[in-house]
Image (cartoon, rainbow, N blue to C red; front, side, top):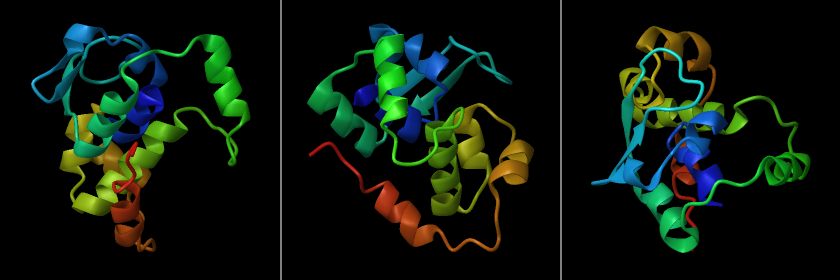
Amino acid sequence: MAFYAALLFAFLRPSEAEALKESDFARGKLRVVGGKMRGRKRRFVPIRKRLQSFLDAYGWKVPTAFWQRECRALSPVPWVTDICRHTGISFRLAESGDERKPAAQAGNSPDTIFAYYHDPKTEAEAEARAFFGISAS
């Protein structure tokens, strides 16, 4: 559970989450230095309240490739590459209204976030509040 929460709430790629070590969880931030990173070779992502609730409830464990495939197969929506990361970034942009904040956390440029995630037709602020209201308890 905490693995998927990290993909959603810290905007990680699965390979970035798989590369995390215990020492990467420190002082309320995740240090992301491994996996298929693009752009920055190192970034720090705040461990927001929602992610912390999953870490507290379930601890950090990377599911095996088999269990990751099983989870993807159970998804109620078609699973596309980095769906959790893209969902989290989309809601963070809707919540903040500023592409610089999700860009820094996701390791992208603000231009990339704006180009791929900004949709002026979407009224997603209420959905973003609901999304970031999800917790393990």
